[in-house]
Image (cartoon, rainbow, N blue to C red; front, side):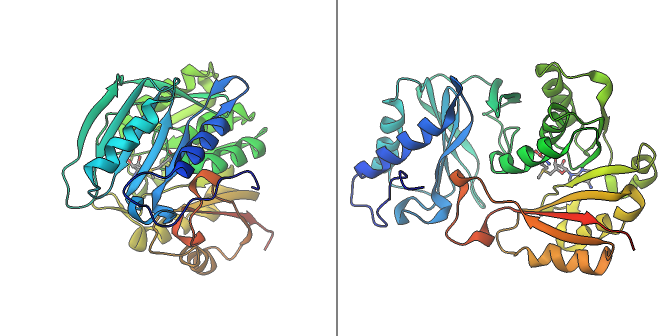
Length: 321
Ligand SMILES: C[S@@+](CC[C@H](N)C(=O)[O-])C[C@H]1O[C@@H](n2cnc3c(N)ncnc32)[C@H](O)[C@@H]1O
């Protein structure tokens, strides 16, 4: 976009004014129809500023969350906190230190942060828990996937595999889906999922929740089908539950039995070390009755210099044999 500020690659000892402008731009994008929506304010992993490659900043209105995947200089961190705290709309700054080989730690250097919050994305409400050690309840990089599903969902029977807190289900029902079956091994995630539907005043009868290991529950999942749309958004590596390299093909193998003749499937893969070719090869070997339609673009606040490092979202359509 032409009005998007350009960031310098190298930082001196102080944060550059361009970062200020960048953050302002992201804030302005998050004010939609008079409401502050969730957004990534800074995606350091894109490599846009070398010294901040391990920093991510999310805007969970009214809280800004700085996530550090590696150590950065205290002086830089202090400046980042001050930069965010200077915005009137920011009522709290949360710093989370995480990353492999590091204990996750939280601190609140400015204002207040509630344990349970409600945020808005595309006009829909989601419950989040920003002080959770791992994921806080909504994967912000999947915004375009949720919008796509909402647009496609009118009248559809949807199967949401690896549903987590059912954000896809909320989007599908908002788009007029006839029904959604959510499957996730985590009962806790599904409890938040139920809550997310309630927060949006959605018809209770439209959504179903299956707290099962899907790899062992195919007959139960198949029963309410066949489905017009299937969403598959697994973890890349969750030992004991799902390892993409080993298990993704086991899910794809079931697609023909689960779907209607013209079904659409959304396949997600979030391993930065693998390209979308991983999913395409599996589809070619397991599902010859599906054809590739399109890649969904990543949201602009998550853009990477290398496209394939971001989450991959592929749409396939079933065709007559
Ligand atoms: C990447 S998250 C899914 C994100 C979700 N689609 C969303 O829109 O927010 C992965 C989810 O897969 C679930 N999971 C992992 N292995 C599973 C299995 N074998 N059966 C069912 N759920 C599983 C985890 O509990 C976790 O909630």
